[in-house]
Length: 562
Image (cartoon, rainbow, N blue to C red; front, side):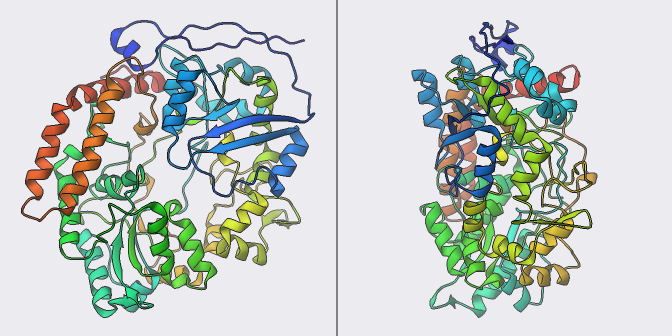
């Protein structure tokens, strides 16, 4: 029987240990039975803080093959709105699922001693994971002080190359066509387009036309309301912070003067009747329902946030009411940083808890998903059913592609393609396997094949092949040495999280208030918000986060903190 060490974090870790200069977590030893050759039926409880509306209990085609190959069935539970409270309850009660994907809540579980250190499990039982993460193993470590590996990064793919854009500022294809495909580069351009079409079409299918709608329901406020403020003002995505690229100093991004002007524009849009008056009271389902009705001319969102509604439009034969993607900024001299390369980013992923009855079987399941066979299965499906091989190349038949494009939710639920991506490490778009085929179906030729006729027409009018062609490329920016700051674990043994929550409460109250105020009141409300944030401890919180960023740079690159 092979024996393995399981190191469990027992002490508060990461930032505050770094700030105080004290040691990191302790570790204990537990023997594991070598079950690596076992494929008998076994079920693991799996919890993710992210929703998975098309989850089918592994009764889909891909899921059945996964169970056949590994013996593993997942009893999946997926949070609908964040799952933070659920993770906090786990940490407090000691009642853990076998497998967990806690996203930004990992530190709570590590501090509670809930997570298995995967280092030795990967070394002994997971050759495919070792191969996958080979160049980035140091980035899997939890911190300088606690170098255990508690999750397999899944939210960022290895060696990812982006071929398409799914965010930015969206406008319906038919709006652009009717207006002669005008330039859409600045906020003023965007506003002009929405306003002109509304004036020509005050109603759509008998309902009032909505020029722009936002989804501020719970955490979605970050995606459609606050994150676009840094995107439109030339900063990359580091969550709630702006990171100085020279000093690595962190500050709440709302403090940047140019972002105040972005929110002033939203205030103006509301005053002009161009912003949906329900934007800050509607639920996500109501937002999607409006989009599915075809009467929302513009969105500022990531496509995954409204894909259900867009798929409904396609299924109804209304692909002209789907959305474009433009890199809109405050002025022409500002570049959208959506494609600035963070390098390989760890921090969010899937891990094994101390409640798991068979960590070896679990890591072998993760390892199968990371294998070439597993990757092709997850991304492409089953040969002869969802794809064919012609002249050595995997291709998706036209009828299957039509299902993927126009009936996406049903297709995913039945096939399982795309449902298992975040359950293990995976290769990114643009990476090829041993047969010289791409691991994923997201490569230029396939992306273009998946576009609707209306999308192709719009892109052609703007001289582009994919939406990404309209955006500044990654080559125009340096690689960020800290990765993506938003996925760093934060200290559980300090006042950081208390202050952070206070600042979030202030932001989520005052930003809508500022946008919905009269233009004469905007400055007083916005400036008051900044003062209120500082009074709540934002400046101390920013100093702590600066230490986290600097420590990550040191951990990942060996560079001394600045």
